[in-house]
Amino acid sequence: MTFFIRTATLSDIPALQRIIADSSRGLGREDYTMEQIEAALGTAWGVDSQLIADATYFAVEAAGEIVACGGWSRRRTLFGADGRAGRESGLLDPARDAAKIRAFFVRPDWARKGIGRALLERCELEAAACGFTALELMATLPGRRLYEACGYRAGPPIQYPLAGNLTIEFVPMRKDAGRRHLRPRRQRA
Image (cartoon, rainbow, N blue to C red; front, side, top):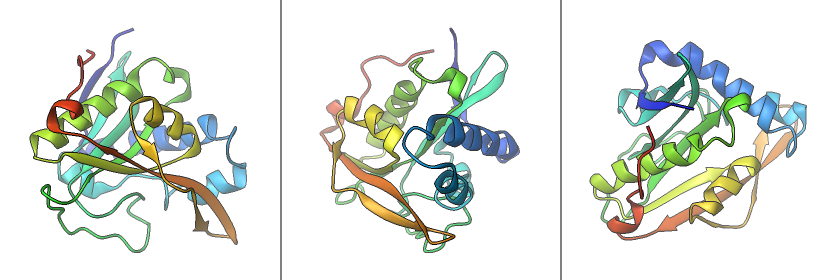
């Protein structure tokens, strides 16, 4: 199995939206109800075009198509799509702030093949190259397993409000490390 990671472009947005929806519906159903998943799509989960503009969001291609996406950010917004209220586009200070790991989604038929881990390592490497020595994220329940396996520590779960009087559980996570610890062991193709 061969895949490669490239910087996402604005023209990728329709494909990224499909990946996010397919991933959420396919991989999230063991942890969330379909009502929660549908309510989270487009607000809590979705494309953040600021990440694409900052060139910190990636598309993973395999077999001639995009099969996963994810990125990191030097901005204050911790999670959410363009449609989420309360976004903060201010820049972080690498000397005192943690870079944000953002919006990781893998198409279900490509899950558990090392793509998420390779993408996370790429993001950690780039954040370290920009001077960040800590990372934080807001994990979905399915995503939490990957992040814990990669050295992230979980904080207390939160209930995030969704439309229709629904809530969804997310887990804030953090990884504090010196630059040498943020570098990947080996980048996959």
